[in-house]
Length: 301
Ligand SMILES: C[S@@+](CC[C@H](N)C(=O)[O-])C[C@H]1O[C@@H](n2cnc3c(N)ncnc32)[C@H](O)[C@@H]1O
Image 1 (spheres, rainbow, N blue to C red):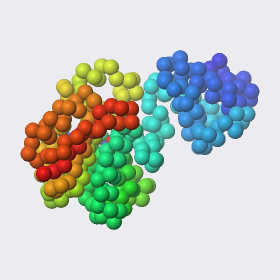
Image 2 (cartoon, rainbow, N blue to C red):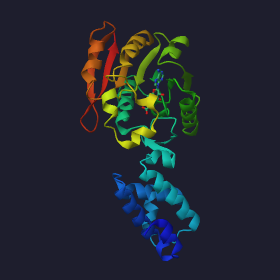
Image 3 (tube, rainbow, N blue to C red):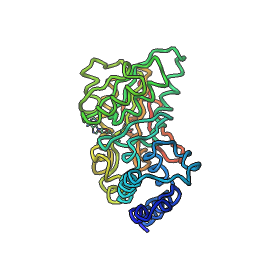
């Protein structure tokens, strides 16, 4: 029975557990991975309660309005719209970030960049003042998470798109770091150079677009909902790394650090760009928690 049918037949089929089971079956039929989890997350969002609360309300009778709203969300999920856009939220580094289709949904593997930066920042002690940069900030995930971890960090974050920066700004405000995260619009790190930060940045991070043209054909359907300019790294996924290393060499102070997120397929090539330049030493590759090469870092000579 469809959920609309269930709603028509009275309170029994409007019982929370029944509705959840119907939605799970529907999402499974649509090929959604983790259908039960998604069905629960969406229902918790409709009922505005933590997901865990669903388990103690299986006999709750949902209102027709709740059913209608849930039906809309599960329908969209069935068309493979990402859960994060449907609920407007994604956790990153343990913090709740607002997300809209104007920004890439922050990925768990990107937390590696924040962890690397935290390690370097901590070497100077917890009270060490720090200038950091996040190029292509999207939702502001990296910049805001770093500012939260290091109360004495000033973070400069850029993006080419005003719509993305508006979301990032809201996240900085709601997570209490708006005064220390400065958002600048422009091409890659150019706004930082224009801001007079040459030679003054201690840590520069970027998760640039790095999906190659050939990879686009085989991506999960969910990625079609994310902004193409946040993903598209050109023919071989390498489009942004050359300019990033070059701009980073001008911005980062002697002894300062850089870390770029990469796809495992281009990790070596990205590292080779830095090895070929006298600006960089200690060029290193780092694995994410899934064991894939996910970041390249270097130290400014
Ligand atoms: C892969 S997303 C990363 C977003 C965010 N930092 C994260 O890790 O979740 C790349 C970001 O770079 C931005 N971007 C793409 N081209 C750019 C350019 N030429 N200059 C500045 N930002 C750009 C996109 O708008 C997008 O927000």
